[in-house]
Image (cartoon, rainbow, N blue to C red):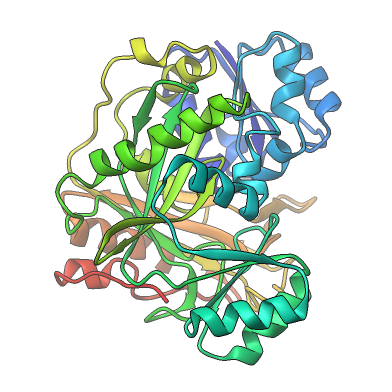
Length: 415
């Protein structure tokens, strides 16, 4: 099949690598792509949040499947426009993508479906914000109601910081803090059938020991050997299937990738958030361990035949990814610096570009990541950090503790 992949970040590079390996894929086209993706896919230029332009490109390249990587095209209705052309697409409709596009909408769906989650209030005025903060108390959790590229959440003990973030966002969801380790669970679904992938843990804070501001993610690992037995089955029963049922009841069935962000509290799993696409950088480690061909799985979800898809197969061992970020990230990253040592297997490109002379330059906050597998978590971690050490980018930084606590037998409890 001919596959069109939308996006140009680390998630899309990881997706492209696995799609290119699938024997059923005769041609892989990526728009807009990045220098890493260029090694495995034809690249095309398109405005990925323009539904008409993407649909026209899908028709032009005679795509048999369109895979939408980032959230913005989904919220903009790109999947709807492609489906209107009769082309299978992996990604929810604009209405269904509101599960990520609006925290308030997601909370409404969870409440109606009886999904376990934190108590919350949607606020637009300073008075309401203050009352909600006082009711829940510290740590204060303030979330931008709309899309914020993974950086719209502030968790802080400082009430002034919480108030400032709320004022900057305008419309926010303020909720009670969920205490416990966080887990990311990806679920592939065609709206009725649903298939869970391996749970992973993401590291959102910029600094070692989960210090500093939230980012789009500084690293991840899988599998989670510390996770409670039966966790995935419980989440599928109490969260995923009730949510899919409620979305169908509303006339907006959700098909694509349902990302379930969880806190494993003393009372059991609680949903922190839903996303409507693969998460970054968890995708890098989950797909590194997936043995089942990816294109066939996504095509089954896109065509409503997921129930007939064979059970997933997983590679033994573990995977770790470590993000290398530009100087200044997550505030104002410096770009345009030369990168060396990045053109090797295991390096996933996230924010890079080629100069006219062929030099590889930084072009974003999270520039690239080293992703490796190993017989166990320690071996995978050593290999991932070796990849990172072989890359040079002036002023760059990365966390030095990705998966370290888990290797020592503990669990990271983000705050």
